Length: 457
Image (cartoon, rainbow, N blue to C red):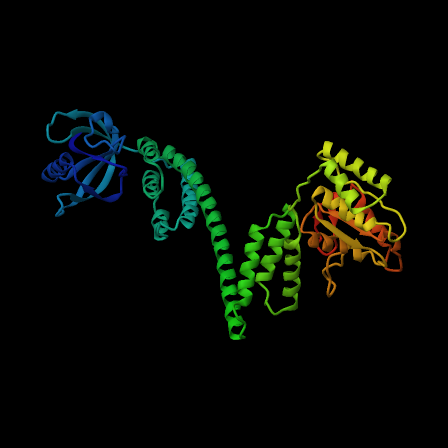
């Protein structure tokens, strides 16, 4: 049993065989150090339960700590004391000796019995191997420490040396300090190291992923800068850069379907990586322009007034009583049913009886835009569906072209001279019209050029 001064520690635990520099500023602690220097340099080092407590009481300090020796003590100009201490052995506080200026404690030294059993030997090897893996993952621990660890044969010293270098919370370190059996300490240490290795491996994966992403971003930036420098050398002006900026602004502001938005962004990303003078860049730019110029969500508001509609029809056409009645019937139904799919009205008659002009009158009567698409002499299915982008000079079909002219996704759409279509070896265009006219299919009309679903309903 020894009576020595006590130095309460904050956020640190000193283990046996450990040399640690400490900075001490509290008056009581400084006096305890001075007393230790005057009486054989022995001091008891124990951690506070709560590091934020400025004036700890005996109940605020762990009862198990380390008996240590002061190697060096130095007063600094700001009044604090720098002290170098070495831990010797574990100790337990038996009682506090009455003292006004600092803590004096009676300490019982805890002697660890060396365990040299076969199990202890195997455990030591496992702990050494696990610590080696830990050091490889944790770059903050010097690799030279491994050669020191490999030479330690005492299980108690091995446990204390390793735990001092692990990134553990204070309560976990205190638990290991309080374990008397070296084998128990090594077992606990092995378990904690396995957990730390798992955390470090996850951290390494995250760092690798972030580094890879940063390298990719830097590479893209470097290549873009290089491409711009080459274009400048070739005498290409900033005109193309401005075009790309305008196009990017249009893509941001244009309301598109989810599919169209995804496709356009992908094509624009491809365009930025191309030389502006290449033929492929022109094809991609034209495609983006076409998609952006279509009225995806631009709708004309209907103004259905049956009296007004009848007045417009009578004003534009004399007679045609049955035709006008049928048109007014359709308008009456549409005014009652909001979500009715766009019906198909078929006008049949010889040239000059007013089929086309009747379509214009209907558009004027309900306040919609009017678009006419002449199909006379059309022989190729691609005239309706468009040509695929792989062909030179490819463009959308007549349906999509007419919608672009209308600048509205719900115009009165007149397919004129539908009876004058013909067929040849390139296909039958009338078959392609089924997808345009069938109310069950035309909500996802797919033009070959756009390769996107467009709602014609």
